[in-house]
Length: 359
Ligand code: PEP
Ligand code: MN
Figure (tube, rainbow, N blue to C red):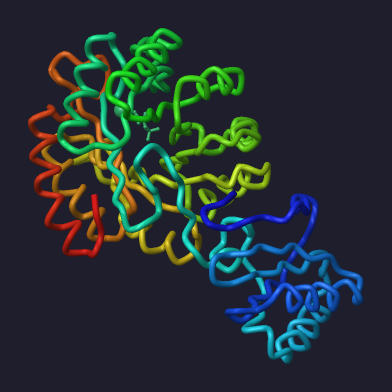
């Protein structure tokens, strides 16, 4: 299932479909069958995707550009066809042409990609049982709907705290039992995919692993939602191709996260590229969230950039909250306290309403 869409069983990985046929609203099964037959008679396959309002058919196997033009024009003349869109982009399953409706991913009480803004909060790293349970209770009370916490930490230096690993996963699971909050945590290694899936509701793929294609394929073979952070030096096209890797293995529950990119600027840790939000929304149907904590690197910037992200149209936020940032074992300078998080949520509420969304 991808959001409200149903996929046919055709394996699209091996196929090239360069033409997408959008049926008119109210097209019947017989109408769809007619177009499928038209393609089959010409020697091409069809991949049918039934949405709530529209059915879309991907024409499979058309490789010759002249042939593509001719078939597009012929099918466009059918009254049951609303439009024929030739896909020129280097990604397919993630594109808006392929699926016009935004994908909605259900996690706990969150419908990520819907009108609801989803706020994920918690410490950069899980440091102890008490720390994560205390933080989980605090962020839930302030309105967060997903708990974040790193178990396996991708630290830039091998001598820095690397996370508590499996022990942290157990504490995270306990935090879910206590608060009901589903957990997002990073998976760094293909060998940990199964273990992490047993303890968490969402896989986080970190910025440093955005182009770890073996890992992308491995999480793509599961049905656990994936939170794909943008590589710190990745273009939007590279990022979307990384999402395509996951989807091409069958897991369509992918959300993107802008977390800041590397620029010449040194006044803050990363440059939070909020241009990415409307750009990505235009190109893909996948939900997009923003991480203003890694995106700025400074505690006092987290609130204003959270507001900016929602104003830009983000579907949610991932925020680092620690009960004692001054004692944090990672990212101490950017983690906010539970009290600051509560202030942030209070500032967010009127804005969320103003942009026609809910929390
Ligand atoms: C994190 O969320 O703590 C993290 C390490 O994120 P990123 O991969 O974006 O640096
Ligand atoms: Mn962090």
